[in-house]
Image 1 (cartoon, rainbow, N blue to C red):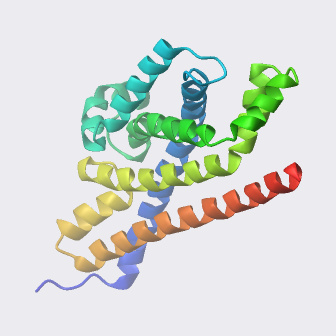
Image 2: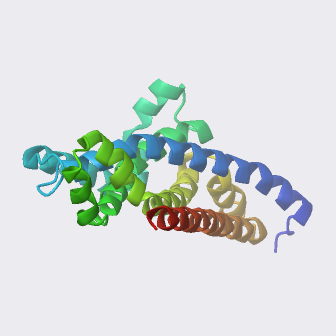
Length: 228
């Protein structure tokens, strides 16, 4: 039986790996929100019952979003290797993984955004229309304003999914906790490193969900107080 790695060395491995994972996930989540939010708004607004119905555009955009988000992330890593190398200069490492993470997360967050906007009470939107508010103002103040708690929740869901994707990327040189678990833990036959990496990944996902749920409750209370 191989000698177990001392806990001090396990911690030395996990600390930078955790930092890399947090860096990848937070950056990709931010970029996914920036790219996915307007796409999600377009999906909702151009729907047959939306503010600016465009059935054909809505259908085409919906197909593109659903096709891209249905591609397995491991396949996306391989397919986007050339683009990643062009943008970052390399296809491996934590910075390089941000490219496929972001491209995979944008349509995912876009669909979550469209679903959140769909839950907004139509009577509130109709009331805004009768007051003569512009469509842009309705989107900004009514749709996004009423759905902000759900949107914060969508950010949390996206971040948790990206933690899993980032861990998967470790299998092909993505860095972070996934690489540590696979290379030092599984391939190195070290259960202490392997299970510690898995526990930290789980803790990150739990903490991210906890934080976004807390923010969503605060935002929702503020919205309720403002409406009252």
